[in-house]
Length: 327
Image (cartoon, rainbow, N blue to C red; front, side, top):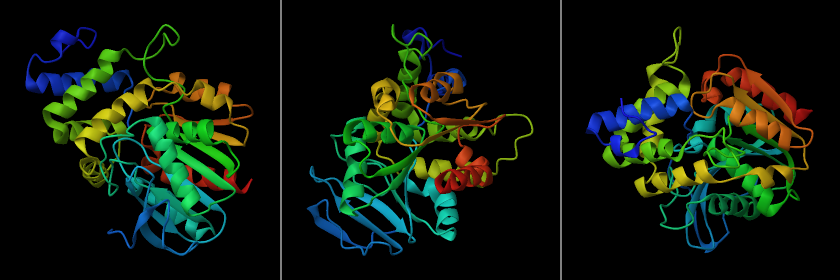
């Protein structure tokens, strides 16, 4: 097993580089990270009727097509997904909330899923601006923003850049803020070599890398786990829809972006949910710190729960979301 503290040992062999880097890095807490009905050719426009069940795209100012799903009618909840997945990862929450009288909107991040794969904008500013583009194109108001993992960073940066004039509440689930990478200002973080190991795995064999990451993501490597093979397979399927360039550049975005000042700008009710056995984004270096930075935040921790709690603890997450949004 290679020592990630010494980059020269990472490439000892193809398999050792992939699996060794993954095992060490993820154990230390590495993050994650239907056809379109209509396509607009004008920036920030869509032809889908508001409040209707629909699947569509918008085109942002830089020409990137962003795919989104828009289901139901009622108070609006938006969802920002983790790396390297897409909006389908939220289906369990979206269906539940539609059945309880909400309108739900979820998009595929640029470079992921069914959105286009641009060579620019693959950073948190770009991701936050794309979320803003969807919200503005659909003229969404009094929105509850929900973000998982990298998507939690997207929500934080959205508030930091665009404010809360359209936002009613925010929810961060197993989210990457405040900052993942180790530095003089964040000595508890993970060394940059750990994230370099992720990039090495992606370049060498990203398909196998995703297969090996799935068990840690959902805690399937823990004794007594009842995670299904189907859950692991869908993680691989979603991950393989991300462009390699986009997934690669997103590693820097979720690991090196400092969201501290963004979190301080939160001025709406905020819920922080996190699994205590998160092997991807360690709870003590993320949720615990974020809850201190967000004024009045409510933090809830799930004992023994993994990173992918939206799937493994779907019913509990759904109940907590519903209670918070209604409350």
